[in-house]
Image (tube, rainbow, N blue to C red; front, side, top):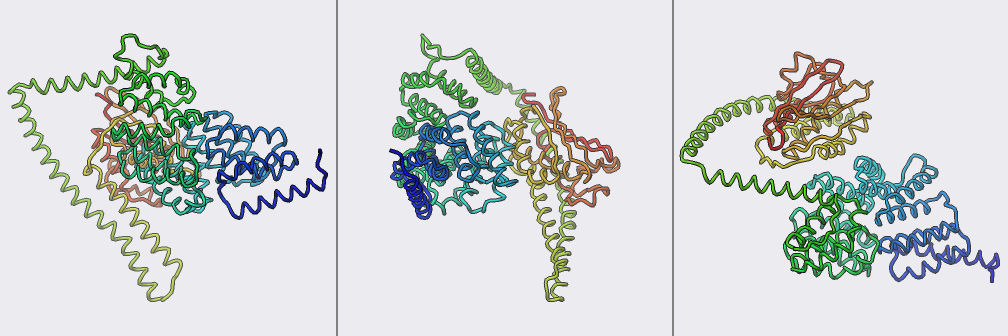
Length: 631
């Protein structure tokens, strides 16, 4: 029996009243509301009311996404598309954001991108140039999954410029930026951002429990990976308890998996296994591919450690195709090593390795075996040193001590020089502050021009102190030498210099830079100084163009940073790496004269050197020479 027009209008009005009342009293859809919302959604489709349907669908999909019911959410979305053609409004935009995020979670990146592209088109129609922060944040998560970190950061930065810094949206944006830094290997920065986000979201716990749980879970995980297990467990247990309070099992899955990982790192295998057992069936039957991959990895490790290798092998076999679908290389390598640890002592090995997997694994194992042999060889050589060699070594040590004493004397002289110059340079902005402070005192009012001089001088002094601090730390602090990927270092620097790059519309290119042995923080500081200078010292009419390339000459890497800037006069090149020395040609630009001196110190502590060649008006070329790995 069809409804009369009058009955249809009356029912639509009732649904509208319900939504208004719900929006006033609730910000987060709870489990008890879901059946009612599904009923109303189906009825709204029957009534053919786009406005009501899309508003109900928006809240429904948000809940289904947070509760991990991805396929049900997609099913409701498909029903909606079968009934209506998408219209250009805010509710449709929110639905597209949520559904794009759902496709990302189940590993369908292609479909996710399609939904986000539609969202961007609608956003352009209704918001003109302004992209809603929710869209930017959700899309950035997809870009991070696709490893397009620079583009992801640009979207997150735009979102943060719009959002209140203490809002839940800003907290989510910060966690996504933290994920970028974590992927690029800068865990200190990642932890800092996660903790900031966790601090902000604490005040929004009641209104946005889903955000709170996700952010606390991510914060706990990153702390756990950095051996801060005590702190990690506090965040993770708080996330689990909050999920329990709102009766949402799905939201507790990630914190429980992350907690199992922390126990795994602490070698508390039974506790780790217990946490996974509690949620195994829910995750195993779900559609969240990334969560399932983590489950398989951690569960397999726990089973091996508790001597259940056959069970671990069975789980791996049943889910092997997941690791091909995910395209997560690190996860695949972890899985291969787990498989190998199970199979290496078996007489009849089960062949579940593909040819490519065997090549990857063999390469890893050869590398590990080679490192092990090298360590054994060094130990053996140490043991068989003759008395003659020991005496020779003692002689060399004495010579080295004498050499170091001479260097120390030279360093002390340099330090006296440095302190003298630094004191002189610091006095200048202090004098300015004092002078204009006295003038203001006499005038007995705030003169904008005088105040500007004071603020400018204090900023100069602050910048100078920062640079002095960087300069002083090099060669004094402990050097943490590790193999580092220069490509990741450059990406991290470009994110830090994002505002400078955007302001000058600078173009920076680099490709296939090598892995080097170095201190990650110092190498990052070196390239930050070089790139920052290249952007700064460029003709205002030109677009700064910087290219970073590498080559191998004998046993050294040569990393070249080429720019199209103002260039350096030949007479100044000999002194360019000395502290506080600045070219007369560049006095109009603000600077401290410490950046390049810091670069030289960093090169030296890495047993390398830095050189410069330049043509005035055409640009400069800095060449960093570093010893090759194993040379």
